[in-house]
Amino acid sequence: MRHADFHTAPIAPLAPTQAARPAAAIGGGSGFGSVFSEMHGEIADYISEGGGATAATTLSVEGRMWQARSQGVAADSELAPAGNQQAFLDTIAPWAREAGERLGVAPELVQAHAALESGWGQRPLRDSAGDSTHNLFGLKAGGKWDGGVAESLTTEFEHGAAVKKTERFRAYPDQASAFRDYAQMLLENPRYRGAIGAGSDARAFAEGLARGGYATDPQYATKLARLATRLQGVSE
Image 1: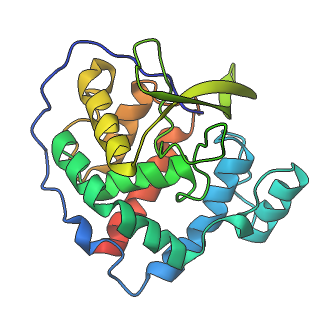
Image 2: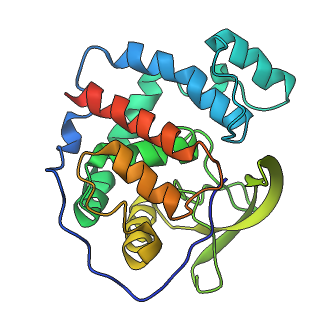
Image 3: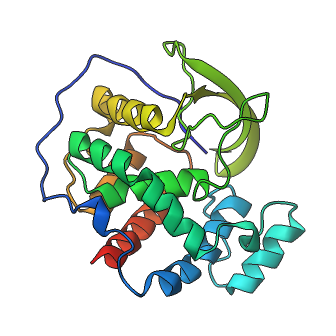
């Protein structure tokens, strides 16, 4: 599900195409609960299918929940309720704002990416002792990574089929370190140039990441753009 990192010579961030909105405004509307109630099924679908293209999007939330249970994976009722989702967004807001400024994108886009990859912080990558690695973006530990490492089971798509694999992921001492490394990785890797400077354009940001190979899920850009767009709608 998460693509390995590719480190190359650093490149300067491009100028934002649109002004980033302040993270403090995220979740400020009365429609938060209803918006994220709709998204529960989508996130459950993402987990149950490993982010695959064969998601049963025509099913109701309850249908997707039972589908997930029948496959022995997390059901949508196990995900964070709307209040916990907002708590997660509030917790990461300062780091999302900082990363967004470096990347030239709205902080909601960064928050959406962290929420999608970590299941709203409810399914963090953990080390052998069971402690959180604070790796909210699913960044793998490539050969040039000299920090902490934790092995975890993940889903990759090979020739259109979801395959479970054990991979080595980066481990951080705290969330701030995770967000800073995430921003640095995107800035240093020319493969993600299309996502840099996307401003508030959720589709451009998501497609830039997907084209760069951030994930093997063929529907990754659609899922990320949809989630980011809804977060932006809540903050208005």
